[in-house]
Image (tube, rainbow, N blue to C red; front, side, top):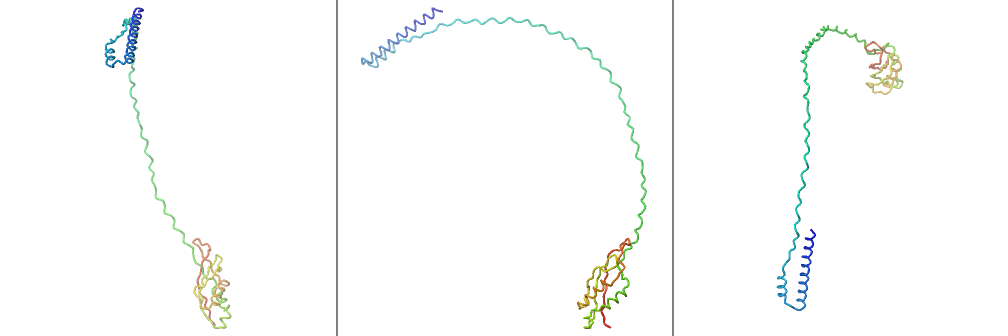
Length: 216
């Protein structure tokens, strides 16, 4: 190995010396004015030295590793026999239907009793001749002096006690004093049997009548 290295170093030194001489020659040719063609011919004659490195010896591959002894396969014991018990006999389920529901016979309900007769009624005058005479006796003084007569239609509201709560003129006599005297007399003197509801209890009601003013 050392000899090959020494030979290679010598070849390198020789090549370096030749290259140096070539450079010196070229420089001298350029300085002295030699033609370019002469320098080119000289350079082409220089032989190229190929330096080849010696081949390295081939390394032998390492021997394969020794094969390990393969252990024998494990011994597998056969599975124990399985005793299959016979299937139990089928169980029969008897479903008893439920008893039918009792039959309910619906009897017709008795008809409702007839409603009691209504006791409702309207208000009616009580002692009308008496209180009508009192109203006539209170003839308006001015109307009597002027001998004015007339007929006044009135409508009154009666409470559960049979007395007049309010009065309104439904038909005027044409004389305001006669109309006013008629409502005033009805409120003060008129008496009534009160109206009754369906159960017969006193309640409020109304009544319409006319007051006639006439001079004798």
